[in-house]
Structures are given as structure tokens and as C-alpha cells.
Image 1: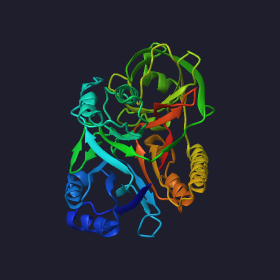
Image 2: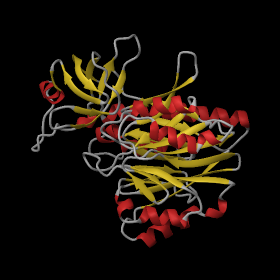
Image 3: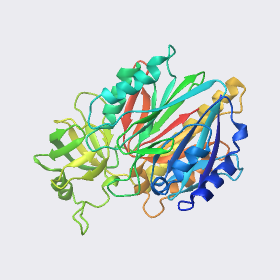
Image 4: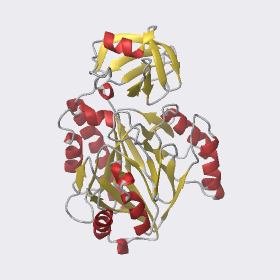
Length: 401
């Protein structure tokens, strides 16, 4: 069984006060044999020194990511948790029967498997037993897709279930997005935790409806990896403005996070969703996954109603599964790790806390940690029922522990 203990602080500038607030809420005497801390925070908590000081103060490794907003619920404070944008949330995973090994790759400069393979050889390959799960915090790089991460890790580890996120932050171009291991933060390194033991994680995913899309369809005529360069022979920027999307005073397309691409590979498989992170000066779009040339493309749209509707549905499924497990095992335990796409955050308009409000309401009695994500990494069931690791955009993913 994995037990969770959560705490938060909004104190960015006073390092001593921030560490004291977190430490006071956690109560580290409650720790079991093995522990790791998962942190999500506003980027300024790194530059102010709070993350480094927190890592020194705590008797276990911490891993995590920057984010645009986060929340937790049912923590040890009994307050029902908290949520916010300029917030640091820390959740301890602690267990007597599940061991956690935290690690980081070397610098990643492109879609080369060498840094990932080297990190595995220093950690997972040294043990005879296979991890039951990998918890991932991946860097958001313009030349590396989420698909590369999950496909490469699956090949290296023998398809260990991979659940996690790509880092984001509060800037439009995400230039302060970073992954975290202990007191260090990285723009270009992949941080991960390997779970060894008896835990049996359950995975859930909810996405946007294909009904929420423009009627026009285009064909991808130029693409390289996760860089979509042209649709129907014109730049992506021109294609999008041709559909009616507008530009701001700086020439940037307004609200690109709310307009994901729905791609049909034309191979009989289900369409996939790819979010845009940025539009480059030449009019190409940096996306959250591979864009194959020749695919049929539809521009989707997510709004607040659609976000909340599928969030509520996936929460109901996860809660039901957790209750069934608790009944079968005669247990009172259980918690959830949740990553929701940053595109869903922006789709909520002025009420950016709506999804967090719904999650906290639905999970009043269940510990959880939520943060917003650049790309969601979550296993799905294949045709034969086995788990297959996938990279997703504009989704909400849950891991039930």
C-alpha cells in the first residue's frame, strides 16, 4: 500500500518561511520504510531558492515539474487541501511494500535514445525485478516529442507502464518549464521514479470530443517529427488564419492552446489529438507529438463545458474502480495522481479554477495531487487488453494508487 501526505505553500520569496510551512504540514514522523516526494510548482519557486532549500530539509528525494497551476486534496492537515497558480504542492508517497528509485537522464538535445538508455543502465537495469510503474517528468523541448519519450522508454524497459507529464510554466512560450530532482532543476533532462513492489496502479484517461471541431479538413503536406510545417501546401499559420483564427498585436495566433489538431493517420486506427505549443516565425506549429506527413487534419476546439464534462466522467470511473478495489481488498487506502493538459486550463476562460474545483469536490475523501501538463503520458489498453504506453494531448489522465 502507498500512503500519501500532502502540503503546500504560496510563499515564494521567503525561503525560510516556505520550508517551515511545508515541514510543519507534513509531519515526517509518519513516514514508512520507503518515501519519495512529488512536487509541482510555479517556476519562481526554483529561482527564489525554495526548491533547493526544501530538498535539503526533507529526508527523502523529491521529483517534479514546474506548472501553471496545481491542487491537492484530503491532505494530512484535514483542511480539504488547496489549489492555485502561484503555488507549490508537495505530496509524499510513502510505503512499506513499494520501493521508489528516483533518477535523471543526462542532457537531451534531440530524439536520441542514448541519454535515456544510459539512465536506465544506472538504475533499472541493475535490479533483477522489473518495475511495476514509471512516474515521469519530461522536459518540454521543441525538437523532442512525447511519442519519442514513451516509445523509447517502452523499448528500453520492456514496456514498463509509464505515467507522467511534460513540464510547462506560466509563460506563453514555456521558456521557464523545468523538471526537478532534489535541489536541482533542468530544462533538458528527464526525471523519473521507478516503483518496485506490490502496488497495482490503475490508469484512466479522458479527452476531447471529435464533435468539437471545424468542418474543414486538411492534409499534412510538410512535417518533421513534432513540427507541423504545412497543411494543404501553406504554412500552418496561414491555414489557421484561413479558418478564422485571429492574431494579436504581436502577430501571434490567439489562444492556440484551445485549438488542438485531430489527426487521422488514414490507416484504420483511431484519430489522435495533438496540441500546439507555439507557432514559429516561419509559420510552423510546434506540437505535442509526432505529425505524420499525409495525415488528414481537423482543427478541434475545447471549451469549458467540454472540459468539465469529460473531467467529471473520468473521475466517476476512477472513483468507482478505487471503491471496487477497496471492497475486494478490505482496505481503506487509495490515492490519485492527476495531470491535466494546459490546453484544458486555458479552455476554461476567465474561470481557470473550474476544473480544479470539480476535482476537489469529487475527491473530497480521496487524497490526490493535480498539476497542469504539456503532454500527458499514460498507458492505454491495446486490442489484446495489455497496457500500451501512449503520449496524449488535451487530456486528463489519472493514476490510482
